[in-house]
Structures are given as structure tokens and as C-alpha cells.
Image (cartoon, rainbow, N blue to C red):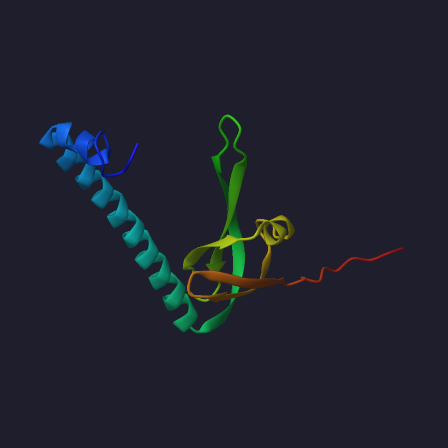
Amino acid sequence: MAFGGPGGFFDFISEVPLFFIILGVLLILFVLGVLIYITIKSLYIWMSNNAAEIVQKSCKVVDKRTEIWGGGDDSSTNTNYYITFEFEDDSSRIELYVKYNHYGLISVGDRGTLTYQGTRFKDFHRRIESRNVRFI
């Protein structure tokens, strides 16, 4: 069957009601618009994180959470890991996405120095607090 010949694609389109053609075009434009919006928003976040200064602050880990998504039928699940830090100087909080290897090494209640850039987690160095322990 030829693309433009008799019985081709354009003959099929000419038989489709105008309402469905308009609906199809609007649906395609909507999907393209959403993809363009997501791309621009992601680029904006990436650029603003790169432009932000790298900050090191003393903090305490106050919460950890995971977000599990996907996993239906034959697809695998994905897990996002987040840690909430509370800064010691002003009691403000920030929740940052972290990779699984950092998530497993950091516990709620840990105190230390957080290094981050914008909304991007860089590192956390735990502060070891000495305790008066006597060995007999």
C-alpha cells in the first residue's frame, strides 16, 4: 500500500471525522508541550544547582525516607532515597536526594557536616562524639 497512492494514508485521513483529527492534533501538541516543559524545568534546576555555591554546614540527621515507584507486571521497581538534615545554627531543614550508598551509611540522629550545592547532595561527614568510657 503506497503512502500517497489510492487506498493510502491520505485516503484514510479524508474519511476520519474532523473532530477526531482535531482531537488527535491537540493530543500530540499536549504531549509535546509536556515533554518540552519537563526538559526546560530539568535544565533550569541543573543550571541553578551548578551556579549555586558549595555549602558546608553543621547539622543533624532528623529523618530518612524512600520513594518506591514502578514495578508492575514485568517491570522492575525503582527506589529514590531522601535524607532530611536540620542545621544546628538556625534549626532550618533541608531534604536532599541521596544515592543508596550514602543512605545506608547515614542514620537518624547522626551529627556532622553536610556539604551540598543547591538541591544537590555532595557529602556528609559524621562527627564522632567522644564519651567517657572506662575500661577496667
